[in-house]
Length: 212
Image 1 (cartoon, helix red, strand yellow):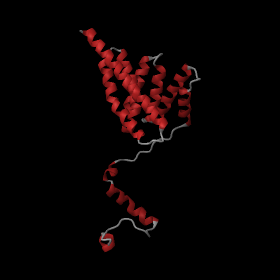
Image 2 (tube, helix red, strand yellow):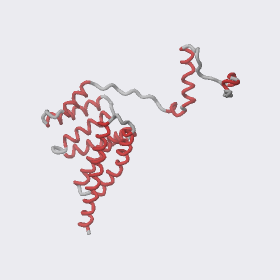
Image 3 (tube, one colour):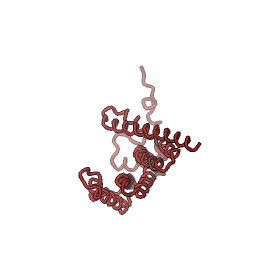
Image 4 (cartoon, helix red, strand yellow):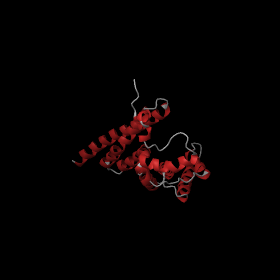
């Protein structure tokens, strides 16, 4: 066969941006324009630098999650983690996780603080498309609050709104067969979502019967 590709017939007709033999400075001069042409949308996205995670915050989280630590100390550590995240200007998953931990640890002692923490964590996770499955964990807590407040329809709506995120995350991990541990964790979340949904549907039916 004969190669009739245009590069073979008349390479002078092709305007190349990068080619062998270019110096580093020549590549540096051409690369921004090349990337802008290949991905115009990228030029509209401002680059943001994520502040470094401090050791103090990491230690606070480790203390809050420590099973051998007294509950009062765990709550204090979670509050400390929230304070450090806010002081550092971290309006990202680190602040959301701090709030989630504080909410979980405060359910029994301070339900109002727990609910407020879950709501703030849900808002942060909900603003990032990459943290949908994290938001689903928080949503289960919010659904429980709604259910205990006699609002089964609201609880069911919360679960339904977050089910797709769990399924998508599960499908992503399923494409990576070596991550068995991660897949098992997502399966646990999926089962929790389904169990919560069935429970809420049952209780909503009972609630509707009582209203009749």
